[in-house]
Amino acid sequence: MTSPKRDNARIPTSGRLRRPAGIAASAAAMALAAGLAVTAPATAGPAPTGGGVIKAEDAAPTGWAAVGRGTNGGADASAENRYEVSTLADLKAALANNGQPTAPKIIYVNGTIDGNQTPDGRILGEQDYAPGYDINQYISCFGPGGKVWSDQTFEYCKKQRQLRQTGSNNMKRQIEVSLPSNTTLVGLGGSSGFVGANIVILSATNVVMRNLSVEAPVDFFSTWSPDDGNGAWNARFDAVSSVTSDHLWIDHVSLSDGRFPDSEAPKGPNGKPANRHDGLLDLKDGTDFVTISNSRLSNHDKTMLLGSGDEHVDKDGGKLRVSYIGNYFENLQQRAPRVRFGQVHVVNNYFSGSTDDPYYPLVSEAQGGSSYFLGAGYQSRIFSEHNAFEFTGPGADPSIMVSSYNGNRFSDTGSWYNGQPADLNSIAGASFEQNRAEALAEAEASGVQAPDWTGWDFTTDVGWDPSDVYSYKAFSTPQAVKNHALKFTGPGVLKVKR
Image (cartoon, rainbow, N blue to C red; front, side, top):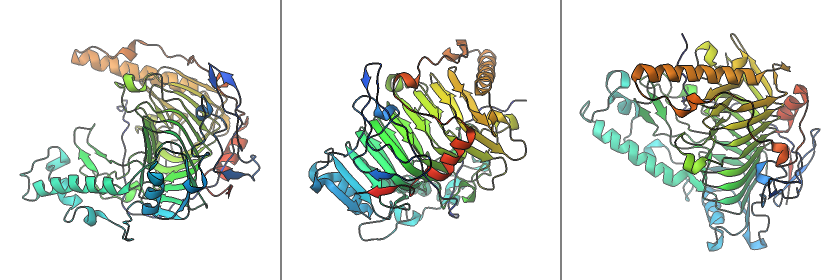
């Protein structure tokens, strides 16, 4: 019997720091296509054999971020609009940019900035945000099996409900860091970056993040939702997210759960750890023209979501154009990425995971789980090429590479599974057909109209080709893709030149 398709998550509280990262290179982009000019590249980064520097004035050399006016962040910043920061308070002051937050600015991050740090240096925790909150008391108020909340289940339930909401709002005000337009954020060293911060790019344009280490924030006030599937935890805070923004370049960045793996969180009503992380890098509500390159994303559940719902065609249709180039995706249990609507290019990325990883095991649908790497969602058009997938452990199977979530258009060329040529197109097609059959059967059984996508056929014609839009070069062997990922992705590989 086929298990139902799911795409939710799990989560952490305390743990140990896991596998750090390396760093990478990019190709050059100079072309005119589809009426969109691609900006000439600045420094394109290191060669695959190493070397290279990062300059704050660099523009995105390729991918969707290089299309149109291009993406160079705060490259035109004057001397007084260039900052070095090492605390959250200093960072927020720099982002305000002397009363001109959208004017070009370059901000160098020196050391680790903690999103929970107050101006007087204190590090806030759960009890600072909501004194008296107790997650175990909160869970108990849903009654047996965690099915129904009642303020009357116990005498403390109303108070715990109020404290959870108050704590969540207080935490949001503290840890949210909003990056305005025309900003370049660069880490000065391999360990410079953020822990516990919620970085949001909201209604902004022309933003660059490079050479930064980002540990996802722990949501002390994650919500138990009994009506979400069979019950699920929903955390509030992404590590990095974009909402209604365009022309973003994220390069040589590492993102992970870091010290707080999901598996070590308190257990919820379903007997599984409470999910205290949301996305690592989510792009929503019409975000457009994005390149994510040479970065390392690791040890996480809900990783990268493009689009926030099938119904949001008014916001996301014709947008969510994103390029994932030369990244290392390690131990990501799902959404690497999951795509709705967008024209998404996935090239030369290295995906690795195991069925028996002690912290982040991947369990494919064929094994009765819900893990996958690439998720083809509603009206998505994914152009995949020359990606290397390694999936090991008992029961590991190639279906992990791609899963259809109402998406019928997917094309892959030249990718590999465990070092051998792989047929991702057949896997994507089979997943779509299974999904469609289940949806049709469910509609018939319930007497409702089947969703529109069940009337579509699977096709490898995605209607676009990235080489018509921007120039790039791709590695042609799995060894080259893997070597690039292991040695040249994430922060600390390139020297920052000021």
